[in-house]
Length: 167
Image 1: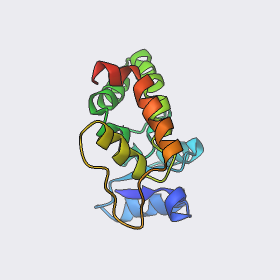
Image 2: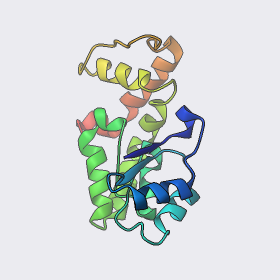
Image 3: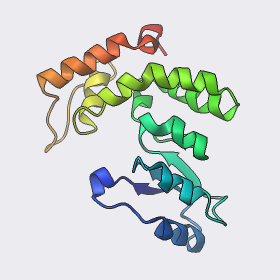
């Protein structure tokens, strides 16, 4: 799986490079796409010969739009705290229930955004620790979440109807 996340690597893998790798290297079967550029995914999936290639969203908040373009899933952050809800979103879309997928997206969206208030994985670790799933420990050079962003994250968790329903 290729990993296209310009926010971390500072470069966007050109579509032509992805196509060439997919067509010449049988072990390259997909991409985690986190550029946020819908045209990128549209161009990639509309390229002849790319029908076996799998696009996964690499950014929770654009999963639903990417699914509508032909992506088949997500490599998720929020899935660490709302696994059933994120799986339900993807499965609802795949099963033709766009309304259900949209509702789940809208219910999770504030938490999705809050999980990126600071550099990943700091916020997800803080959220998981808050929920008793792990300790709030990070390896250097990462540091624990600062106070104000933590308050915003915890407020988003508290306001999320899926968190209250235990999804």
